[in-house]
Length: 378
Image (cartoon, rainbow, N blue to C red; front, side, top):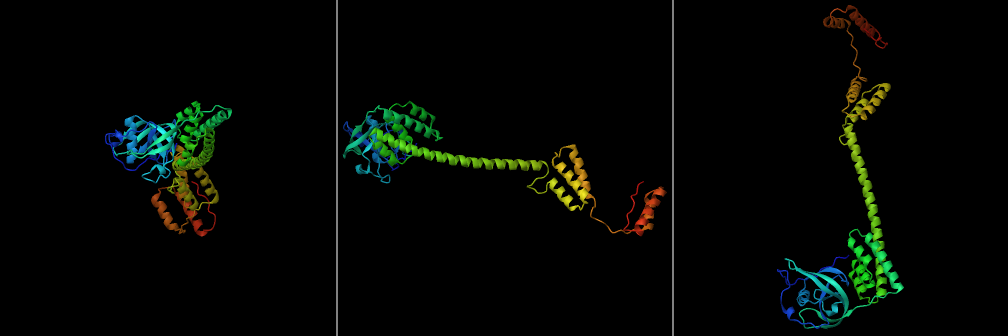
């Protein structure tokens, strides 16, 4: 439902929250006359309860007169909402008779009415003397036809109205129940027209259409257009939600992957995870191809292990040992047989045969440095 645009022209404030006595209370209107409240950008339909905010001096006086006299007011839409002090010529001639159910004045001086639409009326003659707008009016009440064509319109309008409500998430659930229970064609049309999101001028045109069949046809047309808009909006919202859901899912998966990598010691955010460090160390160790292949195989194994497991520490120590070996680091050989014999005698007591075998090995290496030396086994 369109929210009504309040009449915000400044007027006398009433701190007590009740209508004050004044010149408006000394006015006596004819039986066929109404105090008129000019409204901007809102149309009240018969059978509908809607809030109205007034602020202009004339509007406040008209509302207070209606409350104190126990009579209804007439709501007329301005032709141009920019006019601050509208006269009779600035208002439409067909409006709604409304009963003021509640009158509230707020501390900031705003006057709020809760109005219930009763019937359409047409201005017959304006009354110039009261301190507020007033006019003699003719109420427009039409009987509801009961022919087959009207019954078909009622069923079709109900179906489309319920469809529109299903497409409107913020629609109150009791509105659907009210539509289903209405049997009067005119009441159904006015209720559906009240929650149509259309311009005030289009609602005024519906209010001023006195032929019921023509009015319902207009409402059906506006409702069909509104349903198409709601369908397109829902489709756009669904596509947007799906896109957001996909991005959110991707973000969740990426976060889970990051946490898994962090648990495995391969945190991509830091760039210095254990697995990453080991891989770099293996690549730069200069291992023979068969050794490097085995090292990478062991690296894949510990990448899938939990660092809390007993086997993890063993595998990690093994890889650290492989990386620490001087695969590509060769110191220049400087074999001194006499010095080697002195070191062996100084650090090892006895073991004459073993020390002699070591000295022989060093002598062969010194004489044939490019040859293949045997492996010493003791």
